[in-house]
Length: 303
Image 1: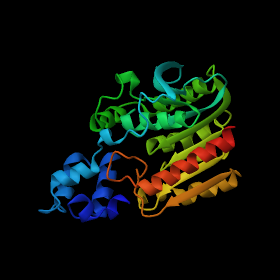
Image 2 (image 1 turned 120 degrees about the horizontal axis):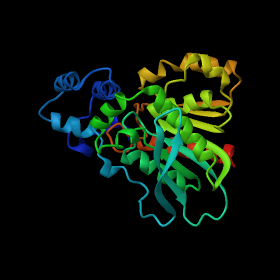
Image 3 (image 1 turned 120 degrees about the vertical axis):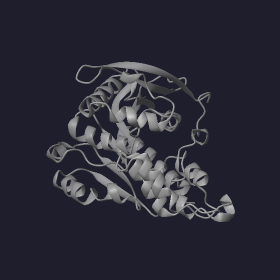
Image 4 (image 1 turned 90 degrees about the vertical axis):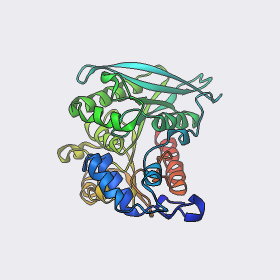
């Protein structure tokens, strides 16, 4: 059931209006500040749909975002650092491997949103490892001490950092992961929101490194480097995500011009962030379909 279709019976409150999801997206991406977001939200609050209910539906609840436990017997999770000479000199990320791995395996870079390595993205890395890949999820906030424990502070921290150095850190992370001792030499990348942009950026800026990319609702790389993309791409977009979808027609033209092997899926009635199961934007049916397609894509192109 999509977030905006959640019934009053199922939740004991009226449906969350689509405007609220749109305002949250603007707030989460720095288009409006928190005061403006709260002011707008108050205009749709009612006795049955209070500000508390609205915020509870829109803001993340990471207790809900664990599909694969840290203690799952099929995986082993730890942390690793890597050199990033063109970025912040050193990066750090969450490394998850299938337990008992006695041979080389494909590797997948898992790239977070614009707020650091939060529990949802760490869980995605565990899902990737559970499927048989070596997963690595870097934290762009490592130079500032790492993800601070809440998204608002994490978003502010990431927004204060040098964007070019962050991108260089992810290129360095891709290089590090592809050369990992247990890597088969085939590298995939999946990312969400800002992370989706980073997947598109890696495909263009490091075409010899990336073998397959899955950007979830991510904007394209700079136009002048799109011609360099070589890796096949599985582009995952949400129907109600007007901000990101506005960049797709031009991006698709450039992918065609570069003869890139790409597939785009538009997920019906889904919001930006529909894969994130910690917020009311989560659409279970669409998220599961998108994830099935993601794993099948990596199995096809990284084997």
